[in-house]
Image (tube, rainbow, N blue to C red; front, side, top):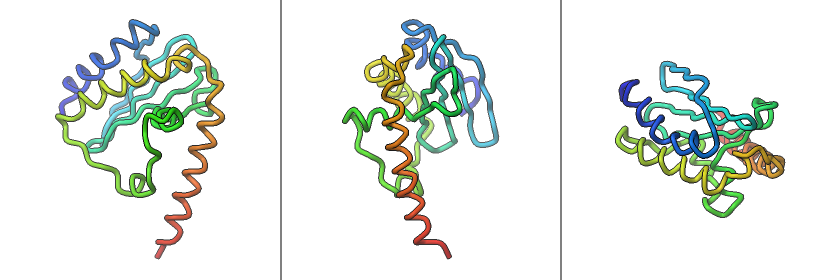
Length: 151
């Protein structure tokens, strides 16, 4: 996918977040295998992470400490019962995505953010410690899995 097409899809998908929650795109970092697009409003930072051929993911962070206080949208959806917890296979063997799937997937993620992440989009991060604990437990599980298969 060309950069212009990527930018058009991202802009269209994030327009509702810009309109409803006053997000502004503050950075686009293209790299060899994809891009990271950062949006901010007065309380929250969103990062869209895109790697060529892999499903994109979005992280949500407290703008006061975005590197420490950040969690994936997927963990929020797991916590709210809208998504099944990922398996270790999903980490080590991510599902591949075709370019034509990018726009509908990103649109769904934007819709999910608005529908299920309103508290965080408005700066209420009370759920963040619980989500981080869930993610840390999953990471520990993945590390155990990887350890079993080390040569």
